Length: 447
Image (tube, rainbow, N blue to C red; front, side):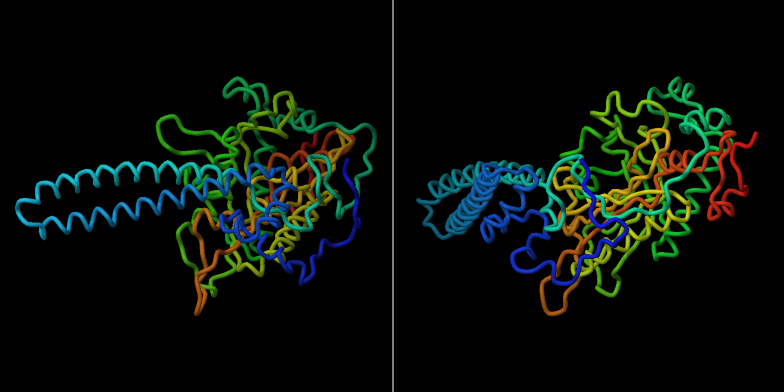
């Protein structure tokens, strides 16, 4: 059950929250943490359900990897010395020396295979360990989130509310039957005013995102495996991804993936930061495990449109950027006149890459419930470590940047909240003032 904390208050995290051992816990699981800070690392990961046995195995794999590398290095040195010595041997000893070098060559090949296997096992195990949670993120699992803020007023509707399907299909703005006929379940056509509403919402969200410093980007939506792995969607979320049959490409479930991948293998100058983007793209999710959930309408579909906020910042600026992204999301919803609440998600319900996440849930009158329409996550340096995105540090080693993401607007879910909260008794929908310039009308679905 959700808990309520400070409704109407801000979600401030003051300076000095990250002190002592917690400073290192901002990082993605780094093998050095298991040896340098085993107790604090184990305690942090235990909050996410990673047990002590798993950490012992990780340490053993790291030890095995280091041992395999050391053995290979020693064998290579011995092989190099033996090869160099052949020419220095007297003629009668060279044949034996060549045979000895051949044996060493075979040994090196065997040790190379052992090193590769040890590194692969180590890499796979560490890839499945989630980010270390923020100390302020609440404990618990799905349903244990903490309500930290509400925005807007809950609408007082005349009579029994219609759901979004009745409103949209009644205006011939949505066609679920033909979507299923052409593509299967969880697909739909938006038509007429429904299609225009989508376009207006995207442009409105982009305008607000730009006003908050985000550069609009239309990214590729087919990406290679390193981008999916680097953002933490592989290997743990593979069941949710659509993959192409003949090419080694994945359809993205969020433009967070190509936006993060833009700066893969780059060293950024501190003067370039922060980098803020607003990705505009279709998104694709298999919704594995969602059988029987939200089967009516367009709340949980395989294809949807989204405007995604993404930021790369210096490590010390991560907390403030998380607040700023959340504020941008709320500004978008408030401009649409929508009632919603902010939920601090418990560590047991976080995605692999997130150290902390806030969901924004809009009120859905037909369900009498709040449902998630956007979220924003602080992934600290978890993604940057995998993608090797660093910032230059004068007089020291380059350091990893921090990445954060948040949905500016998920079109289909926002349409649901908008048409249901602004519906009128006759089935028409009042258009929020901020959207009128983009939509070109003040009322939708007027009879």
